[in-house]
Length: 294
Image (cartoon, rainbow, N blue to C red; front, side, top):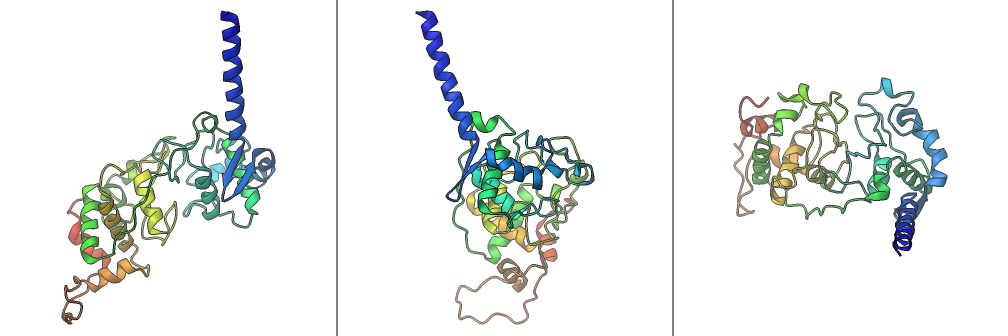
């Protein structure tokens, strides 16, 4: 009887293992089903030069790249919609292919057919057994964006200080905070903080919603942790709006509101004082960030 039970248990576990493993050979994105069996050739042709055929990030070009290519065998991903420590969804991996990662050697792969990208997602998941044993995390919810106001941006500057963002990113967002030179990634390699001022994009997207998402998911494998439990949703949106003002050259509603340099009158028909002096984003940041944080 014991032998039969052990045999039955072995069959069940093996069957479940086969089922889970089989599922990991597929991806499901935007109505497409990707297959690892057909994604290998595209991966080797487009990705192996950096990530290597084995997926360990030690491809031919890797020694010449900074930052280094992702080690796909570790299954630790920066850009996700899921909680810190969890795996990304198939959509997360697909979207990273679609947009690339700005300020790195990772380009966007929009010229490839959608089915090819879906197949590559399935193939990438083969590099780590975690995708077969765990599956992706549950995406975090992003609440509706709050209105962009001068008061909100001012509060966002206070949140920037409260969360010690300037210790890495610097008071003006140049990525030159006092801790910047000491930061390392999961591989113990130097990992400089992002310079918010160099582009209108961020590593994991270009929209305010994507910036909010990065703040609550964190960027696994880097010093950028999740702040999901460190601030309220309203505070997070205020922080998003403040960080946008650090992109001084960007034409945005945040910079328009900030440059006005004055609060909106309670009575919208009220005339605004023409003597009110506009303030630049840098002046505003310096007025809100405590001295000595840079």
